[in-house]
Length: 606
Image (tube, rainbow, N blue to C red; front, side, top):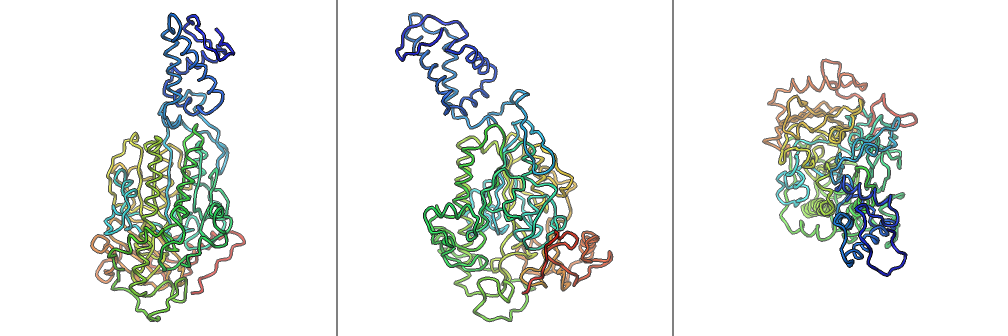
């Protein structure tokens, strides 16, 4: 029986078991859909609850319930149950179709996706996990509560490690921003990508993490710092919300900040340098920082994303990279504490510069030199405050995901692109072979339904090249042949059989050309070979995690030299003749055979 057009409710005779609410065929299909796949139907109703069409259907449902409840015989049980279930499902707080864990019928299981490279491919079933990749910039590996830091508070990061896997020997194979991010996005070591130092150069890799996930049917979104070239190239992301710094143009964060503040370098009006050791509170309130903006944009994306497919969300903070300017609450928290003093190695170069007047930015001393205790205290307080601020914003993101049923449907990886010397051995910034520069936080957490154990601590050496194959295997996507990294899923299961014995890293001299380096690290020891001088250093990281005691004179370095010779055997620079390591060979920012056309590689002047 058709529903009358008037708003006046009147008794109606009992209806047949198949309701006819104005459009019988539509309603019959709705009923069949609800009865056969109740949870999936509930998610559909929830997703469409704001549309006018569903609103009219729900209104009719309410009207018919009222009509038949007021009639002499009441509603037929099947009709009443159907109508009440429809209303209940539409109101249920279900997040998305993907989150209900129901496999859709075969015709809708696949989704066309435009890949970053090659021909379009089809996605696999929507029960695959979402992926969240969180990247900080310049965070030391020891700057985690779970790593035993004496003062730093990182509860959100610690939770990731404690409820998943904490990779205690996680490294950036080329510890500065651009080469590290190439490694992260391509799954290849730095020499295969062609960049072993810091410079801007166009990049066209055979495959990227975002591109492979998009080809597999994922919606791919990036918020924050990408720091790859050419700028605005998407590298497989559907959408970039790009903000590589707080002082450049073509920057979504500064566009957002412009709504209230004058844009002309306002975000840098605190006066601290973007690559130096000055520490102070930020002049902006907490809710105007790049870190806050990143998480706000991430949450807004999650609210408006396509619910018909899984997502890959990359949230990339610029902190704790200088300028060292956390919001004032976070600076004050650590400025009031006794902070760890910088490590000083017995192998350090003698200092021949002035006692004061060390450049706060790059200068003739190559980011080296002592600063007075007050300045050092402020530097460290600011650095820890930046990390604490990031952690609190991560907690905000996790809470949103938890409240909306996404947290246990998402595979989460947390890393940094490189570390920060932070005054250790009278050095600052990055590009060094030492753990303060090369070791990074490295945490991974899988959804519970993947069955991986919790509270795993892994001492095997892993690198940023391992992130891409790990995520691709976790979601069931093929790993491209170009990828040289290895999936970490076996390590996350507690199986380290057959893992690599050593991880190799390197960086061309950045602040001084003579600081070019190669290094090998295993579960306990690190061997460093300075490519220009031939100097060797050797550390026991169990007994001496701050690398204060060089053991190169006591240790047998022959096996380490042999392995490094094997790693460098086919390199065009001539680091080895196959029998010995040869210092003084060119060690530029780009591998000579992989310099893009039109790009000039210049040695650092310092």
